[in-house]
Length: 144
Image (cartoon, rainbow, N blue to C red; front, side):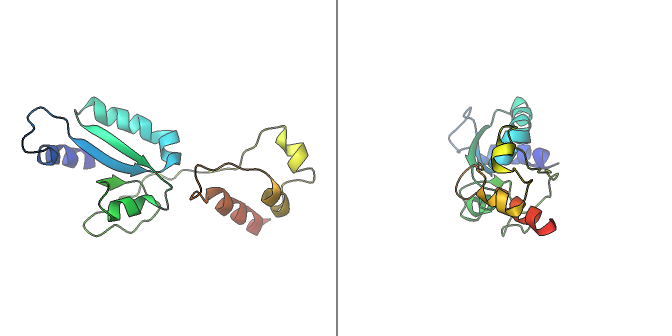
C-alpha cells in the first residue's frame, strides 16, 4: 500500500525540467536492517521502478532525526512516534540474541555468562551511537 502510494507521488518528486531523469529517494536506515532485510526489499522496489535510492545508514535511535531535519523522505527508526507530517507504520520485530565465537567463551566466560563477564568481554557495534549490545547486556544482567 505504501509502495503504491509512493509510485503515485514519484512523478511529482522529479525536477520539473527532467523528462527521463530518475527520481532519487533518500532514506535513513539502521545498519541492522541493511544487514538483514532491507537490501532485498530495496531490490524488489527497484525492480519495479526507475527510482534511485540514496541510503543513509545510522543507528535506529537516530534515523528519525534525519527525517525531522528533512534530509530524508523516509526512515526505519526505533521511535514509534511519527515526525510531524509523517505517519509511522510498525515493521516486523527483529529478535536479537547474544552470540560469540567458540574460542571466546573459555577466555572471557570461564565461570559462565555473568553481568561482570559481559562488561569485561569484547563486543562489536556498528558505530559509536549503537547501544544495542549495552541494552542487551543490561537486560540480560537484570534477569540473571
